[in-house]
Image 1 (cartoon, rainbow, N blue to C red):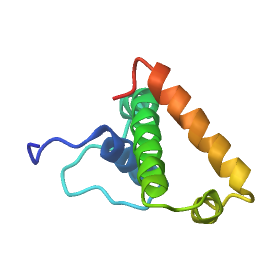
Image 2: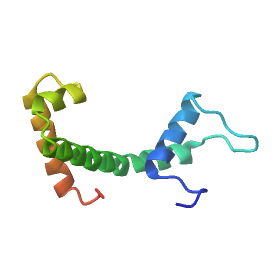
Image 3: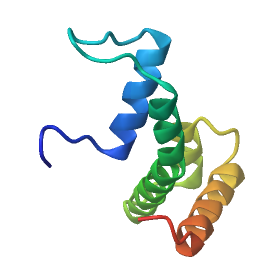
Image 4: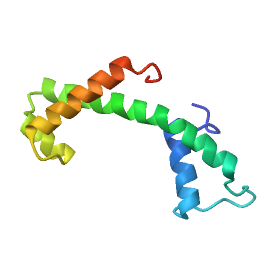
Length: 102
């Protein structure tokens, strides 16, 4: 990737950090404006789809390595193995049918 370009995820994070004060503008950089915020918001669905695919893949690999749903639920901060399995099933359904994913 060209160093002047950032991924959608990084663009959303950067705008968020700049707006919150967690990151500072470099000398000569323009302030974050409404167009920047609108652009970042428009990227959120794409970023969410990428994260869903990443999580679903990680869960598939965890199961492939023999991890139990109990172990996975702990890693996800969920209360029960059933909640972890249901989360996985929703992710798989969403990523399989989301035309904007990937």
